[in-house]
Image (cartoon, rainbow, N blue to C red; front, side, top):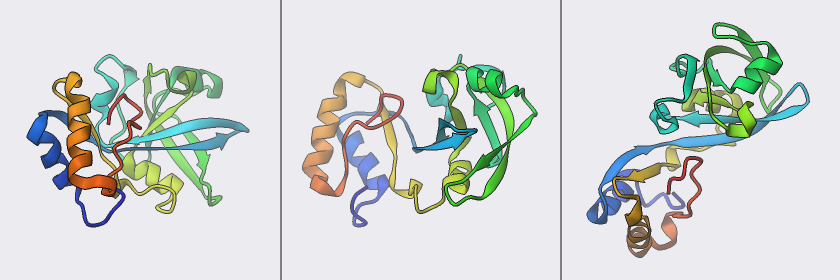
Length: 171
């Protein structure tokens, strides 16, 4: 959302006037350095967007201190499910994360890290991520994306950012 005069529920309702929603979720990401290498940290409200076959072992994060990590990150850091690793926030605070699972995602060539949205906000801080103003949508029929975008743009104008920016092909 660009404007405080529009709610996410209003946006969802306007999209559904022309195209049924399959799912809606929030996502945010930040790039952080671990041991001198940049890694993408992605916070999700719905891990189903990764697909049913994305989990190699363990489980997706449920708590703010849990992380599902890519297989190459696990291998390079010598981490397994149940291990902890330390992340330093942009503010310089250290936070321990517990490996809840290993995912087969191609995010950063298998070196990315998935967290709950709360976990990402705890690491990155509220100043970097405003998850209350972001939502991604997947339509029942992807062919209706242009129609749904045009309808939202017509209704809200520049109060809503309708650029296709989702990490998982969403609008």
